[in-house]
Amino acid sequence: MSSSSAPTSFVLPDLHLVTPFTGSFNPHYPEAAAESSEWINSYRVLSDKKRAFFLQGGSELLCAHAYPYADYERFRTTCDFVNLLFTVDEISDDQNEKGAHETGLTFYNSMKDLTYDDGTTLCKMTKEFTARLLKHCGPLTYRRFIKHCNDYIEAVAHEADLREHGIVLDLDSYITLRRENSAVRFCFGLAGYALGIDLPDEVVEHPAFMAMHLSTVDMVCWSNDLYSYNMEQAMGHTTNNVMTVLMRHKGLDLQGAADYVGVYFKGLIDTFLEAKRTLPSWGAKIDQEVALYAMAMENWVIGNLNWSFETQRYFGHARQEIKRTRIVHLNPRRVQEPSDDEE
Image (tube, rainbow, N blue to C red; front, side, top):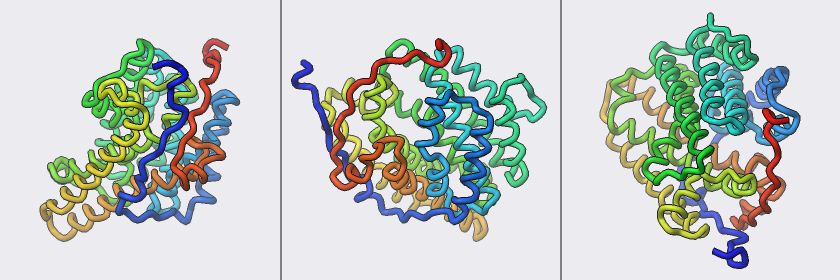
């Protein structure tokens, strides 16, 4: 495609319109978010440029939408976790596979073993978070959480390798990788902690529950890719985005890829609702906890949609106008700057 015929804008599908979930907001946001933000910024792990972008993203605001039911202490801990994730993600984005894997191992080992110490600031931050988490986290939830952490760091390293070599995965392979490298499954793993419940493995591994889990994880991943595409294409980071995958492997243009995301998202909603309808009973107590967990999945989906148009991370100062019109004008490609490692 010549530059003269390259698209300059695209129209977002209306994901809010097809989402039947009701959003909410954590009342502890002002105080807990300020504490968490002060905590993460006190370490100065990121460069000034990255820290400014990080603060603009509003990760604590995302938590307020995604975990509206959490009490003060648990909510503060979820804010710390998502701030940690954004930090790891920003560090890894500038690293090759080896560097991203080393960063991930520090994160994983520090979370799995509070006696671990490799002398890094990331290690210290992660252990402080984990100590707070363990005060109220059930053993089954914690074990699954650590498993998701391992899956996440392996996927992030794989993503770095793909980025280094300019490889765009096929759709099925991408969906599998994106569930992990997005950290969305990882974040969903905090729902049990935030709710104060510890679901047994037989529930979490049941096909209907797993269908609910994966469909809502995919809703968050696909909507994030849709909303972040403009920002990523301007930075030259498009290989890890479903829009690029669809254009490359489905032969779609930019608008066709956006439309495809809208149709696929509606299918994920239908999958979730059908799986929820077919859940078996595990007894009154477990059934009540499963209902709470289902609500937590829904909170993440609608909360992420709402947050995407409140934060400046994806759409900047134009976010309210884009929410109203759904028209995204492509930003010009930025001049590549040296990474922090090269400065």
